[in-house]
Length: 73
Image (cartoon, rainbow, N blue to C red; front, side):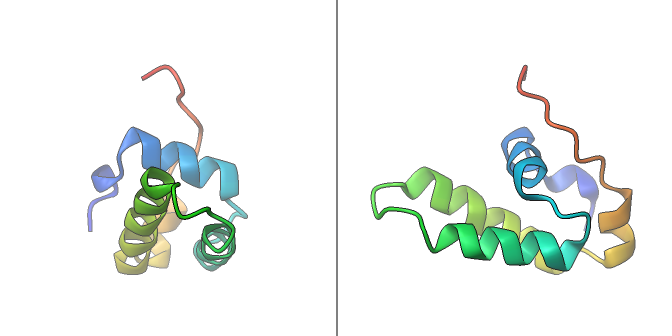
């Protein structure tokens, strides 16, 4: 999977919850998702998309990600 498949919003979400490892980020996002209210569908969908893409991403490719927020785009 190409690292370019993450959207700007997905990268920003990962920046907020990153722990430095793919497994840590996956665990943090999964835990955060449990606290979402039913009406928070946009954030739930975004989180689900990130989790799906992370699952398909190798640890080597995860290490190459530049997880710096870009809130200007």
